[in-house]
Length: 98
Image 1 (tube, one colour):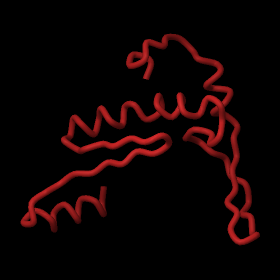
Image 2 (cartoon, one colour; image 1 turned 45 degrees about the horizontal axis):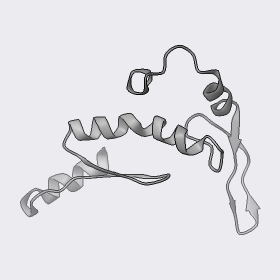
Image 3 (spheres, rainbow, N blue to C red; image 1 turned 60 degrees about the horizontal axis):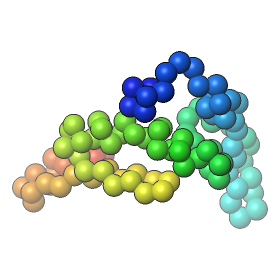
Image 4 (cartoon, helix red, strand yellow; image 1 turned 135 degrees about the vertical axis):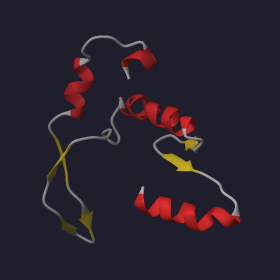
């Protein structure tokens, strides 16, 4: 990541924002137990959009290297590939195991 954006050394702000976070899921009034978050970007944070771009930048580079198309949005990324009808069963198998 550091070579892609020209950042060198230790970036303490990012480490502080990304470490020691927990999350829970709430559905129809029932909330799960909290669990530690080991990766990702805090949703709704001021630094979130910039951190998301830096966090996912290498995904596009790796995908393009393997001829997989990438579409990125404000807080989401989609990876997809196309194939002929005769290769569809192979592509389906790869997507389920990959």
